Image (cartoon, rainbow, N blue to C red; front, side, top):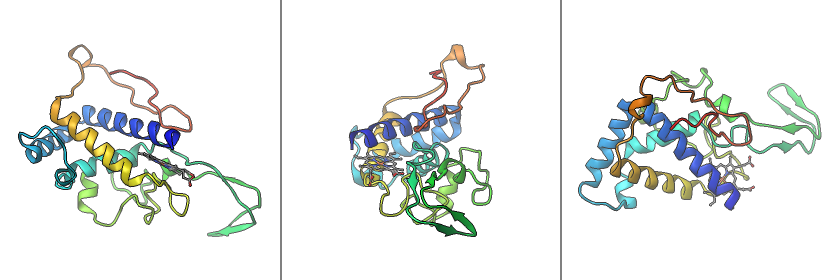
Length: 195
Ligand code: HEM
């Protein structure tokens, strides 16, 4: 539980902050919403979070572009299985590349863009496991049991960070082109830490 629940949450928050910092107009919309809903309150309640539709869309978009476990945990086929015309022999190790699926232009408009609005316009696509184009928590019986806990934690941490701080690239780095690519691995770590 500790292994599954710590890296995933911090990686998600780190990527979302990176995307927000590199997309100042998205950052200001999210910040405006958080500050408007919370007003002078310094604490974040679940009721307040439910009024932050844009923040929730930002988190979905972060998980779409940077699923913390990009190829999920491999499984082994226990018997010969046929799937959409493909025969998977018994004993095959199967990876599901959710990273690629959640950037597939067949399902996603402007797939390479950090564009949270896509989740405001659609009521149907969610990460609970019913939409196979978006399964950062996996789907089926072995999907993540920490979905609700982690989304609430991420919402709460991000709301607090956006409430209390203004985030931007430091002046001395403003004109640099930043490498925001991902390192290869079981987790989607950043390749370069630049701020
Ligand atoms: C953004 C946050 C998180 C993401 C994206 C995430 C994603 C996932 C995924 C994809 C799996 C399935 C792995 C596989 O078998 O392919 C999984 C399993 C699991 N997750 Fe999470 N997780 C997150 C947070 C958490 C948290 C906060 C907890 C616990 C407090 C947690 C506990 C677990 C456990 C115990 C499993 C194993 C379930 C099993 O094998 O049946 N996860 N998670």
